[in-house]
Amino acid sequence: MNFTHTEDRRMLADSLNRFVAEQYGIEHRNQLAYGAQGHSPELYAQFAELGTIGALFSEDVGGFGGSGFDISVVFEALGRGLVAEPLLGALVVGQALIAAGTESQKQKLDDIIAGGVIAALAHDEPGSHYELNNVALSASKTATGWVLNGAKSVVAFGEKAELLLVSARTAGAQFDEAGISLFLVDGNAAGLVKRGYSRMEGGRAAELTFDNVQLSGDALLGAEGHGYTVLEQVQGFALLALAAEALGAMDVAKQHTLEYLQTRKQFGVAIGTFQALQHRMADLLLEVEQVRSTVVNAADAIDNAEGVERAKMLSAAKYTVGYVGAMVAEECIQMHGGIGMTWELPLAHYAKRLVMIDHQFGDEDHHLARFIALGQNEGQSA
Figure 1 (tube, rainbow, N blue to C red):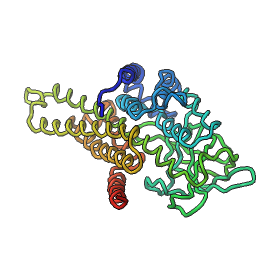
Figure 2 (spheres, one colour):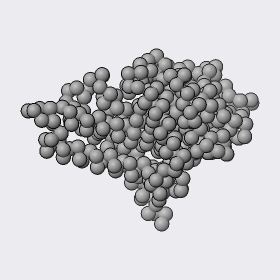
Figure 3 (cartoon, rainbow, N blue to C red):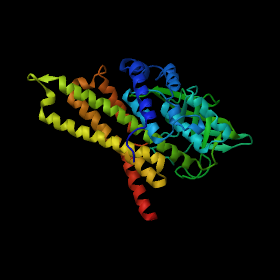
Figure 4 (tube, one colour):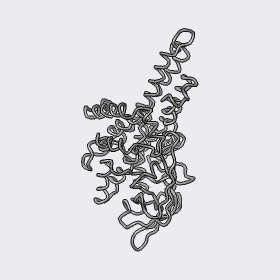
């Protein structure tokens, strides 16, 4: 495996990091992320112009990247700047269109790449716990198409999304993998009620209620009843993106902490000279490098692995960033002392984002259990 980024990826990382540093300073970021919109439509358009969204997709669908390492480079840069823009939704919905869309459906990808459409995945439901197969929202076939009834919860940028990818049950019981279908739904569809709210780490989410939402027949994405496979595939892209974002945030948090240890003085000397703090910082640095390795493995898995092997490597990455993210958040704040919890210090916002990344697309416990189950199934099939 080659651990060195290509020249194109290095240029992409440099331009993204520079743009984020210049346009997404922490004070401005907090105004946007905790504001009424939860992000900046103007800056999102600029990210698109810079090629950030296009880097998430391959050339044959209108992008210019699309590999696992392209995705990791983009989201690591976003994590370094705590960027609260709806790029994860663009990645997930776009990859679903590529995996299962018709030619006419895939044309929607052009608008996503151009930044003209905000896309969001609406899968989680009230009371669910990260299970991809837990779908109760119903889709009933009609003479002209489909009608959706039910609810989705914690949909990232759900109130802003013009394009929703909605999982619905067309057959089977609530926890069956078979019988799940995917639908493309206009964000302003009649019967769709949105209740938006701010997320604790910035950005927006929404509770969605579908009350007899009428869809045409061409709203179905992929084969009826076979949406679970697509969900599993696009979840992999989300896990890689979140792991890379967490790595970027960890790098900044550890650097801020190192600088603090080198400048904060007690008894006339920098506290970084205290052996106990040196040991804690050394452990932290080692754990962050472990995360870096798992992100590399996950990016490689997106490109080269399939089936159980791919799923295991991606769950391993998400599990690792879950427990290390919590460790980084706790240790960095503790080594700063009380100031580490203040709103004015960027560290507090990085800590919140690291904790909340753990709860997107399955937390640490969920992916540890998934990794174990996948290993057992692999052994039985062998």
